[in-house]
Image 1 (cartoon, rainbow, N blue to C red):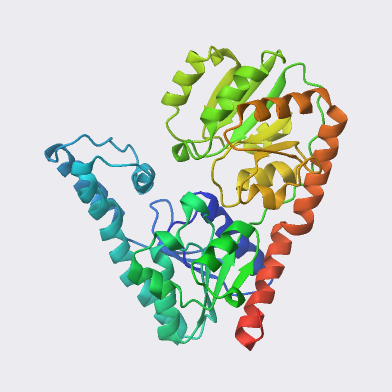
Image 2: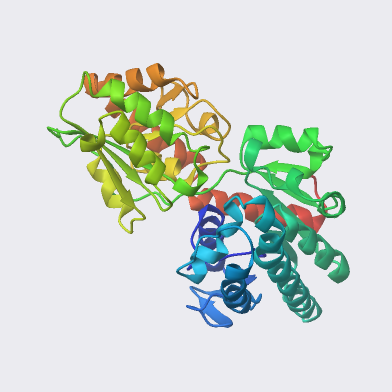
Length: 411
């Protein structure tokens, strides 16, 4: 497994890599994860049967150097309180004057250092015949590294594309890296739209395999609590706003609470909520909206809620939506890539058009007023992801793919 970050840095790609690796290790496959070093982990360790190589990419050194140089660079740059916050700054837009410095310090230097070390580790594992397949969990620059290492060691390589539309990793690469990545033996598309985009990027369809993101199916499932206060929950990374559509959600919520009261909207996720809190105040809904920030008990919050909502403008395949469906919580999501692969409108959830405030409000009201319909959608949602997206099912799909690649059979 080749991935830029790995737990304890925990995002969607990192979680998927960890859970898949655990499933494969339980099936007695030898799993090696090559990733960047994190201060909370050892440079080489075993995690739940997974061999993790954490390579120092220079983040700590670059972080300290950046903090020293920042006052001398024209243009303000936010102060990072932690290494983790620094590591995520590639998502933050720079001022034009500091953009070049940011790219050098935040992206280029760590990527070069990591690439040299990762290439060496993969060569070592290849020579020792410890690996048969290189599975790259992101389709950005790291995918080109994986392809080069695979060709040098005569191994098969898989590249997973988890982004669609605005989040496409493959098409966001420089031309040279893109041409290298294109030579991968197989591409994983987690949604129908991603598969379509890969085909449009001239990736042969025979080398594209559709495998969704996985989710753990808990033993306990959601039940209507008969809450006096109607509780709606959103879970997502606020730093990905406006693509998460939380501004649309707040506008829709303002309409919804005109007909439903008491009601509470929970917004869960890390990131700066300043602009969103200001919007809530301007709409005079601040008393019915709670910004909870990053949470370690998301599962508990989902269980206590009445509806999960995902108003995104763009998605790959949302882990938060999968988790909500897995417990049988009634779900509302925008009719976009990833969401529409999981939800069949009015069967296992409600699909609404993105940006449509009225549809969003009406969907919430419908679930509130028709509890039988809500329960049925929740039950159907749980059945859907149990059948197609459980980590066990997804791991089986990958094992089958690995065997076909190694035996030269059609994917």
